[in-house]
Length: 425
Image 1 (cartoon, rainbow, N blue to C red):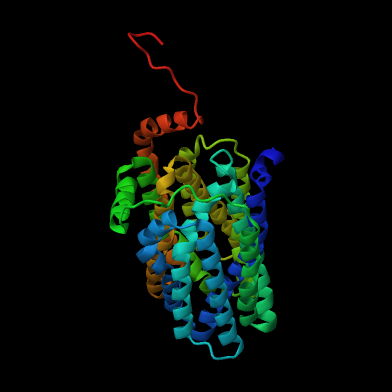
Image 2: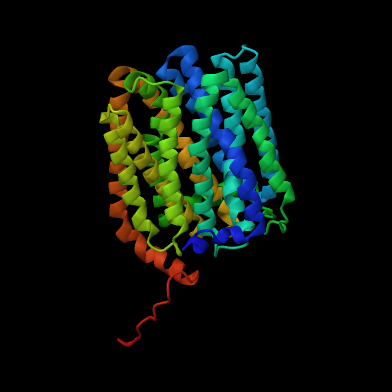
């Protein structure tokens, strides 16, 4: 089972990427925690926590469809080299301003928007690039699961390190470490041996390709349903993260160490979820997994909102991390398995829009509602919304099975069932 769970690492390019990205992502999670803590230290405002999250994610919502077209047209490795270099510049600028003592909320907002612009291109390019690194669909689902493991290993380690560093020397050094860490993934991209991208030579105009991508996503029920459910859960569930500094200080009466432990616990649950997906031999059955883990995520949020005990809250963070990551990775795996290759970049841009587009509005709403009904009441409503979204997806399953089965048969995921002729098989 262990060998099966790691099978995507047999591919040299993915193995190199896995090592470089693992280092970079630790810095990314350090910056996420440090940014929230810095904003809350400077302002004490839950609303501004929502504003910063909104500023960092709304560019992906606005630029997502255009970015998807460009990703389908350009060499994806070149896109990633450019986005990683720009992200390093952004983090180093944030570090310089913070370490010099000149950082303001306005500058944090501007740099968050800059990072959001980078992510609008980086995320669909990175997701679409996976299939080139593993050279086909056979190990794609395992690569996605291992990628999720990598992200959440960093999510476990990054916040814990950030909490220690913030307490010792301040937020600026977290941003500095993040800026330097991008050179690891840049080096891994340069070390790869990648054949030319087999798409991207379309003579159609951008508007035509935009329309083609939207028509495909909106008319193809399996992808449309997954994206809608992902948007619902992202809008309702993901914004709980912006309120974590409030929970840490006002509900659990902790400091940066406690914040790091809470986010680390969610990361530990996410790692367990990703590993369980990596051990799967096939994508079969993931459509049933999606609503189940979305409901688990929502239930974890509801229970967390009611907890006032540190250890119980840490346990519930692990449950929410497991549910959210398994939901996101399962959705990603299903979409990347069934999508047509020439539309992969555009579809993955809509996937990222469903997450990075819906969650900033949810973050802004959560930051606005929290001062009125409190952070616990806000997270309670978030959990209820996720459970409702899971129920909606579950009732769509009977409509999806007849559409999905022929695709799985064509891809060799399911055995072909002979068609009966004149009552005979």
